[in-house]
Amino acid sequence: MIQIDGPPRRVIDRATLDAMTDVMRHRGPNDRGTHVADGVALGVRRLSIVDVADGHQPFSNEDASIWAIQNGELYNHDEIRASLRRDGHSFRTRCDTEILPHLFERDGVRAPELLRGKFGLAVWDARRRQALLARDPLGVKPLYYAAVDDVVVFASELKSLLASGLVQPELDYEALEIYLTLGYIPAPRSPLLRVSKLPPGHRLVVTPGGYSVEPYWDYPLPAPEEGRSEPDWAEELLAELDEAVRLRLMSDVPLGAMLSGGLDSSLVVALMARHTNEPVKTFSVGFHDAGEVNELGDAKLVADTFGADHHALELSLADRQVDLAELAWSMDEPVSDLSSLGFLALSELAASHVTVALSGQGADELLGGYLKHKAASLSRLLPGRVGYLAGTLGLLGPQRLERTSRTLRARTPAERVLAMSGKLDEARRRELARGPLAALDGGWALRAIQEKANGLSADPLAETLYLDAQLALPDDMLHYFDRASMAHSLEVRVPFLDHRFVEFCARVPTRMKVRGLTGKVLLKRAARGLVPDAIIDKPKVGFFRDSVEPWLASQARGEVTDWLLGPNPRYAEFLDRDAVRRLVTAQGRGTHGNDHVVLAILMLEIWLSSFLPRATRQAAEARAAVSA
Image 1 (cartoon, rainbow, N blue to C red):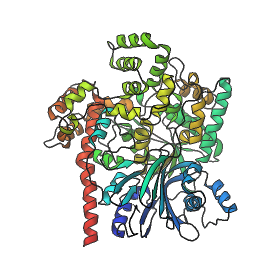
Image 2 (tube, rainbow, N blue to C red; image 1 turned 120 degrees about the horizontal axis):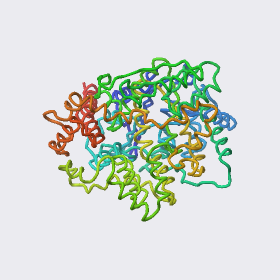
Image 3 (cartoon, rainbow, N blue to C red; image 1 turned 180 degrees about the vertical axis):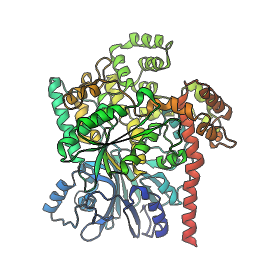
Image 4 (tube, helix red, strand yellow; image 1 turned 45 degrees about the horizontal axis):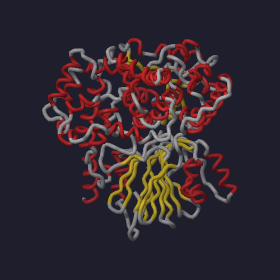
């Protein structure tokens, strides 16, 4: 918490700061640290990974005029520490966070530009009454903030902000409209009206009298380089990825890998095996009744290929092995993605063996791994009126073909992404919306996408990849990755999302990403000879995403009915109960066209009726303890 203006004062009592910090104990079960002075209050929970014995946060510079905390890892901290030592700075530990106050003293608000890692960080300069908040370039780590009266209150999780007692749980209905359409809420919005998410690659600078938010790193626009052969590109891709993997092996505690059985995680395991002397510990999870979308057999094939120490967990779609209220508490805000359920179970399995795990997340968004990327590539091959007519004819086909058809008919990059990824069309929105939601015009999801679409080229595939990586990647997939893993005090690292690798991928021509109906062309070429051909050549399987229909069907008379058709659902303030009942009833009878809409409403209801009351109750209890 940072004071913006006025005479310096104590901004919060220590008991409330401890409550805000300890509600995130899962992020750091090993240690709690605080720094409180006039104008500032910093609290941190530490998951000990580098310099386990001595790396206690917060850290200060030599004269204790600058203090810093961090959630995350800085993979180039040794290089920066050596540079700072040459400039006269001294250090007491090997902990990566200790470089931050010294780096800020030397480079000021430019400090985040010099970091290579994943982080949400805060630095306070007592002399200048200045503070810096920053989030890593790709948004692997979260950071929420709110300006309340004369302070900026911030935290890694929404529940921590609510524990301050300063933030009221007032809903942002525009954000909820976006959520119901996309299944997640893009930054800078959050589900609460006066709370923002610091966008990836942004910093927030507090100076006496105010604060500002600005980018320090821009997601690279597509800039394809011609004149190079595909083998040359594949060689460079493998070298860049190998370096990103090697950097992420930095750890003083046990380390492993999430192994789905797909190409991306398999290649990460292959590269890890190059740099480790012991067998890589690998972890997989699947639903035994999910049929073809269960990849446990493929994961075992990869693990056996590299002599990994493999651990697998098989679940059933019919079981209630995950408490959905606890899932909502861990997720921090509503996310309509069943992958969160599977990843929570996978994280629990991995955390019983290691503290850090690498993952293959991000390759699809960079290199063209999804069906929608193939649809975007097709729209490039069917330009103008031909593509529009093909799309119109496709509306007569099955649901998946309909989505492809809407993609082909889209006129702008934002419309194309909405056609590919939207879960709620306008007719269904009008049927469902009531009260404050009905007062909106239905265009907020499109506007949220358009905000990211400036400066794009005329290549539909390049446009789609660019927008995907700034929308669904940080605010859906990385959101549940971080929350699910941190719920079990597990640090998950994503080498594909090293910002230098991302900049490399922006230079790769799109024809080497998707060619016809083949995705990730260049990645497959780079992996050939390292990863078994059976893994490279098999069809793409989404991690639990294709299990929405069977999971909802198995839970139709259980969780879904209990939450959505109860006597006093919270969603009734802005959604029509009869319309929701019709959707649930139809879904229970085997009509699956609106599975994703039902899932979105289900997760929203659980968040409204479970997460918010629990978070606000804890805030009230903390205030009562202070006044007692």
